Image 1 (cartoon, rainbow, N blue to C red):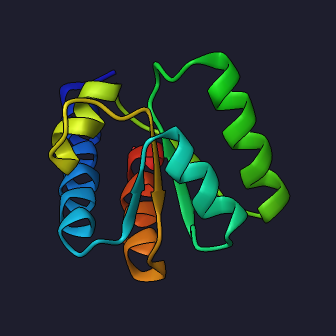
Image 2 (spheres, helix red, strand yellow):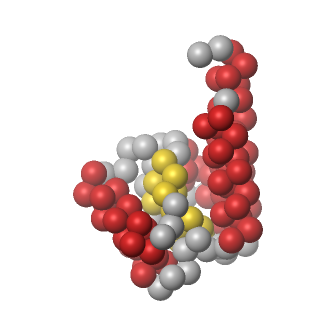
Length: 115
């Protein structure tokens, strides 16, 4: 992996994390496993973000419910990185409740995958 591609991935991660911070301040996130599952069941979630170090059982449960609801699941960063982005100590699951924020995050994630 070249320096440019590594820098591109870092910039995309930082962009996504900053968008998550904005969404938190706009009260458009469900934080934590329980609230994320509730947002999926209530059909309020537009996108699900899981940390790379999310527990296997939680990941399976949330991903299964998201798949049933037709939601995309993105795997991004560690629990601490996600938590820092939204102003808490750690979060392994985040439900994005706004379609606009979800589209911005997905576009940043797509850039990361294409680099």
